Each structure stands twice: as C-alpha cells, then as structure tokens.
Image (cartoon, rainbow, N blue to C red; front, side, top):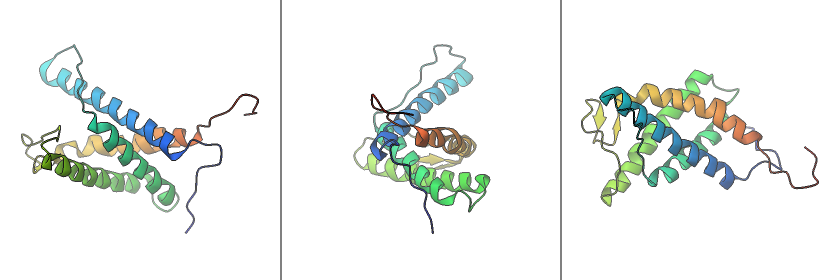
Length: 155
C-alpha cells in the first residue's frame, strides 16, 4: 500500500486544515444565503454559520484529503465521492450529537422529512455529494500544490 505524501516545501497539515476550514465556512455561508434567496426571495443574501463550522469543516475536508490520497487510482471518482459523502454524514452527525450534549449544536434539521434526530438530513445528499467532488477535485488538489516560497528561493 503506497500513500502519496505531499512533497516537501508544500504547506503543512495545519496550513492545509486552515484553508479547508475557511473554504467550508465560506461555502456554508454561501449555501445558506442561496437557500434564503430561493425560499424567501430575499436579495440581502444573508448567509449564516457558526464558529464551530471552522473545526468541523477543517477536519472533515482534511480527512477527505487523506482518503483521496489513498483511494485515487484504486477507486473511481464517483465511488470516492460517495464514500466522502458517507464520511461527511457520519462526521456531521457525530459533531452535532456532541455539540447537542452541551446545547451548542447550531443546526437542526428536524423540519426535514429525511432527518435523523435533527442532526443530518437526506435532503442534502446531492449537495453534499457534489460539494465533496468539488472539495477533492478543486480545493484539495490545488491546496496540495501550494508552497511557501521564501525570498531568494526559485519556484
């Protein structure tokens, strides 16, 4: 079993986690603003999130990065994205369950018919699937290519 590791000179795991966290937070704000536009025709485009999203998305996408590095070449993209979506649902349920124990869970999907304890909902399966595809094909691949170049170093 060969797992591709990021090349030396690439961003550290903490730097990549940070990029993934900010990406996830921004996507959530854009998604909630779009949903508000569609459901209430409100053009203020107010997106909402929680500071908890930084930890949740950063960790979720960082794990997807590790899965991607392991599965690429062994599993077709469509199957990988299904696995990422299952991971996303597992992570969302787990973090939501933990946060709910402290009355701190910022989401509640109880009003959706496909919800499980209000912590996840099947209605978001397609957006999660394509979000995972974008995460792997755009965000992760490009983040792994980033390098910090110090003055005087060649590209």
